[in-house]
Length: 308
Image 1 (cartoon, rainbow, N blue to C red):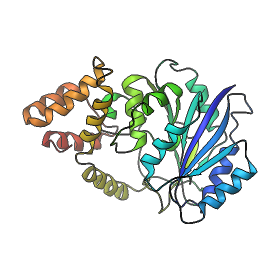
Image 2: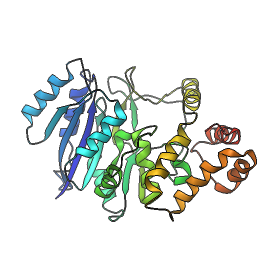
Image 3: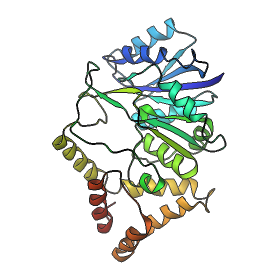
Image 4: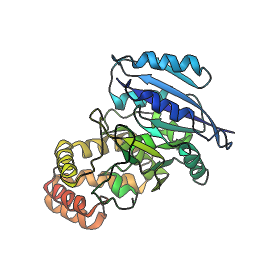
């Protein structure tokens, strides 16, 4: 049977973490002989009793769950540290502390990954089901189109929700060989790596209840005005971050993969910042895109202004 490591970073998650841990332990991938799994947890300096709950579960499930205490370094560095310290396995999955996984989440992911490349990075992710604090479904006013993954999208937008990500060992080893000094989010780095060098599958069927509450580091809005405000805030907050992230991506992988066409495209994207006319020409020729038409139009303006 294949092996799987579920990697969770916790921080003041006492309110919801029991439900999440129970849902992880109830995954049916062992029942259907898809993969045996273990859960590795890094606490990022909680002060609300999260560690007591983790120790309780570690004692109850010593063969399944292990945790350790880390310094408060933030969610990105915490997940990358988990990935670096992970045991050898066929597959790895990221988990947040406050969601609820449907029993077939890992089975669905592994079944798909088994059909994908074995020699290159392979990433599975799915569309999350939005729920409230009590795991009741949320009705959304926002139409979310089917995702179209690709490097021309990944350069300027992330579609991978980290808590749905499952990936192979090739991808894990490639990432931890040199961790980025800067990335907007750890899941965006996964997306870039997968579509640049390997394969990605975006499952439109939800296999996770993505809890929306005031404590979310990042969340998804269900009302048009709320989401518009959030997206505008993110566009403003990410000024310079897109190019900074791509610079880091090119720095790490450009030496080993100089002939990769995606790397060449990223280099060009960074070079055209110096000239309005070069940016306008790049926009016409590159076919970079965001998933939603309105976001696409906004980013075209941002690109022409050189404010990325």
